[in-house]
Length: 492
Ligand code: F6P
Image (cartoon, rainbow, N blue to C red):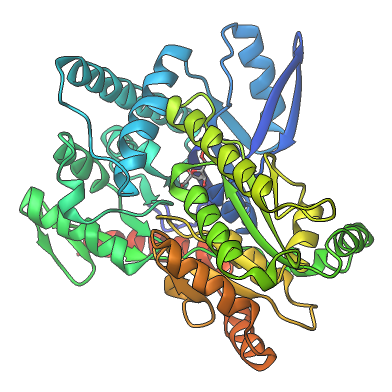
């Protein structure tokens, strides 16, 4: 990056996401407990990116008093983070409301916007206003810390107005935006009443990134069909300016998982699980407890497997980690938790014996060491989301199979972004088709060692080369490229 005299400014990467990568808890007056946050694709990808960055995000709790805001800001600053403070009313409408009750289901093909009553319309208007207000609050915090030469990287569906607000304040700021969820087909997206305003706000960014080419294509089609714009080989042209649109499939910090397998802590955990599951094949699902993850459908497929394959009863265990998520985001999440528990109860009740419980359901986030050990002793990874931006747990499972003699098999939803990168090595399934998933479980359990190895090698190569670090540096390189293009245009 150069200033007007051509001298280089120090480049600083400023990440802006709804959440900070830390859990914040108030421990008393001016006392804060900060812990690493887990359980989400965005945080683990950016943590794996390994670049120095300043991270701006919502602190995860309401802090009303100025003194509290000051002390928390200081504590977070030491961790390279800057908090955005939102009052609970705005947060409710922006996060639980527009972001998670409207955009989230729409982007995952799980629900069209509700506008069949005047109440629904009024509440949608309020949510949309709060969404914009929250995006403005994020923009204000970015601008309060902005230094010339900063590269601003905005993330996810919570912040789709941020590129517009940043550019309105300073058109020379370089702004990228990346979506961690799918972008739906234009036929789905166009049902959103606020479809044009959102697209126009996003198009103010210099670079718009998605996990897959399909999502990028859906976005471009939406711009063409809804806004009547022209597509170009680089992206979308609007007002004589091209916004670049491209696919940047995210990865994990594979080395971190592979190295962890060598540590005494993971070895000890692994020995414990091997003892627990001795003589049994382990099937594993690791998901946030979210409708998009298809946990009920997965359980039904396992039930069908137990019903049809009597010879496997007592010889297989399904471990399902269901990390509690968005517990305040409406009744659907509570209903899902209840449904999952009911199905597990029914299956365990029907099939368990005094020495065997078919399903072990854990409603909690495991520690990194526990998770690595669990992945390492798994025979079949069952990652069967109904729709998922990428699904990095599939990547983590592959990385942690590294030391195993008998490689495990990945059963992966064809509706996860990861199917486009791990499709060659995985058994791809339609997660809505319970019979198909049951058949895949059986195929995975009976697959020859040769085929399991072959499939694993293909996926392992991908996971260890297409890492989070490579993802972030490709994205930033391309964003910097748009900067150089602009500079050349100015010189002409
Ligand atoms: O893109 C999906 C995402 O925003 C990721 O951060 C993560 O997978 C998940 O949703 C976390 O959700 P929340 O921040 O609402 O708990």
